Amino acid sequence: MKLGFIGCGNMAQAIIKGIIDSKLLPKEDIIASDNFEPCLDKAEELLGIQTTIDNKKIVEDCEIVILAIKPQGYFEIIKEISPSTSKDTIIVTIAPGITLASLEKAFSKEIKIIRTMPNTPSIVREGMTAICYNSLVEDNEVNKVKELFEAVGAVEIVPEDLMDVVVAASGSSPAYVFMFIEAMADAAVLLGMDRKQAYRFASQAVMGSAKMLIETGKHPAELKDMVCSPAGATIEAVKTLESCELRSSVIKAMVNCANRSKSIT
Image (cartoon, rainbow, N blue to C red; front, side, top):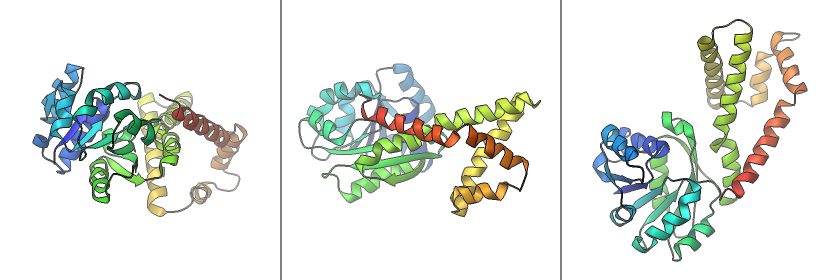
């Protein structure tokens, strides 16, 4: 199977590296294009894949084509490559807000399309990717694409009407988590801890807490209660966070994020 990427930035290179490291495909079967040649030079040097500046070559040579470009550039690229696609070409997108219906309309013909929404932790192979697809895609083709994204993290198949929720819940949420870690580290520095050490404590606490939630299967509230001793320091901190409406603020931010995702293009 030949796999092509139109766009070869950080996300594309992370996915490519995961695929090669997982031995899903040999590097010789992967080709990428980009209009920014330094990206291609970097991909050739670090990943050993084929590169080109010709987007049509990607479509003509590859069974699966991943559009790894900014959402604003999608329809221009689709107009360019559409005549080169065949009935067997599988187009995979990684952009928020661009629906299957709008993609089908842009291609102006029947085309197999799979929408995905990965997030930036894919760069360290701890990503979360959602997948939905149109009626022309067969189950074995979905499984092929699912396996590719599993090389950089977890994957869930969702109905398309949840894709904007996915953007809020995992696509954009690393930004919220980084802000939380930064705030915890700032507080530790205020209290006298070295900055580098503060980031280490805060980030390890977040990573360990997430792993604990996943591996125990316990409700987050139950795990929170395990840390909160009667009249203790933790419950005092929880009371403060509640008074600052932490949970309401997160919910409001995610709703706004999902709404924005619907109109991003």
